[in-house]
Length: 281
Image 1 (tube, one colour):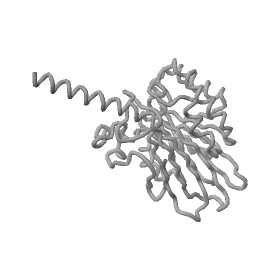
Image 2 (cartoon, helix red, strand yellow):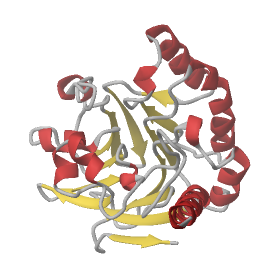
Image 3 (tube, one colour):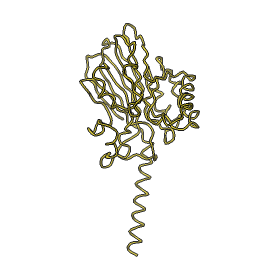
Image 4 (cartoon, one colour):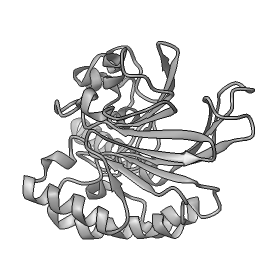
């Protein structure tokens, strides 16, 4: 009888823990980060950053997302990979793109792919890219674009996924001229290879903040040197250059989170008169 009661108690504790972990996937953190770049002091650029949406395990509906971002001042939107992994979810994902288009970010929506996007068959991935482009997104696979913000050049450099060995720094930077270099990529480990690839700010994701971060995200050690250095989320510096790792909006494997929250981030690039800061809500 004692063992039966103990078993029931353990099952109840497990059920409550899993329910709490599932509820955490709805508890979105709004992060606001200010980073100094080589802009004139009166120049600012607000970037909405979403990563690891994993529509297969995403608790946030398009309507939820819109409610959280509709009052933000957003100039540019960056999606840094792992949008989806199944062909049947391409069209459902476009509902989120339509929501992002409602924001009317004047400099557009930029997308790079992550390792889960590459689980799609080649033909499906090509269809995904074409569908994104047909919806007005700019997709970059080792490509770059230049924006002119008054007299300031902003080079947006999309480096393909490092974890699946698709990143090509030479190709990504081909034709890049002087200006502020904003890098979008999925796996932040690529930053350790960028000694000769200049950047002013880099946005990434990939680690989900551990997703199951209790007591520590030991399972991330296989995901590269940064994870082994416990650099898995937030604002960091490498060779005095800032890079940011999003905790992601969705989940992978199982739709739970412990010790971390889904994340929406608003990054403000500004002139160098003030220090970089991070705020959360």
